[in-house]
Length: 363
Image (cartoon, rainbow, N blue to C red; front, side, top):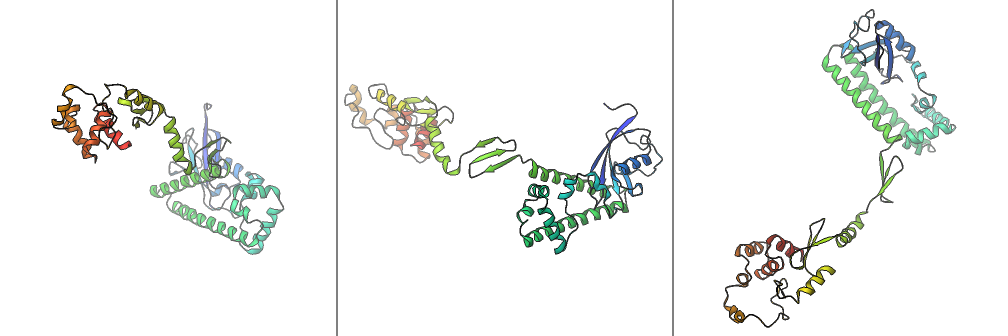
């Protein structure tokens, strides 16, 4: 909780070619402090001269140094942008960074002798070697090859120069017209994107969320935990084994339905179905007894029948004898199956046309 009469603010430094560029300063100051006093605090923290500081609050410049923070509209929790209009050549503000971090920053070396001196200096410093390994893997891979090291170094210098030129152009627009809302918004978006990219790069280099190891077929997380996964060649067999081990529920007339997948298995495809089919052979009430898809009546069908069975040859069709509607048979025929196959499937599924279609496609 903030004390009464005090204001906590965050200063974002915009200083091209300066080591403190994009740094954030968190300050807890008395609200009656003037804008000029705020510049003094920033100078004490960063060594940036007061004459080079220009503050912006909500895209509006804070011009009067004599105004208090309250009178200037600064409220608790505000973010103030501090533009360094003329960045000095000697970046004294770099002292705020740790010595190890300063070692990882690339200097202005851009000729063969300076780059080679830098390479040898890194090799002589185990701490610098470890830091280069973590932050610049490509540079570390070429640490023992002077020519390759120089190529990668020059490429990084070019990338830095391009980014610096872009920032300087944006800062030039801001200096020309600090009240141009469109220019302010572009600069704000540029700063936001750079911050996001820096955060992503830091997370990638220091705290990767997860890494896929294709050799071990594992998903390895940053905390050391890993989750194995199946390789592409193992998926078909895994699917077959899963289907074979899946619990089933009994369907009509010996068929089985997967409890999870809903897959319809024809009668006789499993031990349970086989036993059900065997029992059905001794039951006169089993519909479709002796029928197989794509074939006529089995030769093992009982010869004895009802007295009127002999005259059944004059019936219009087997469908009418079993009692299946013409519409159901036509639906299955429209799927590409014969009338005999459709009748047999309907017999096996108690006339359920959906189950019958699934049974036909599974066969």
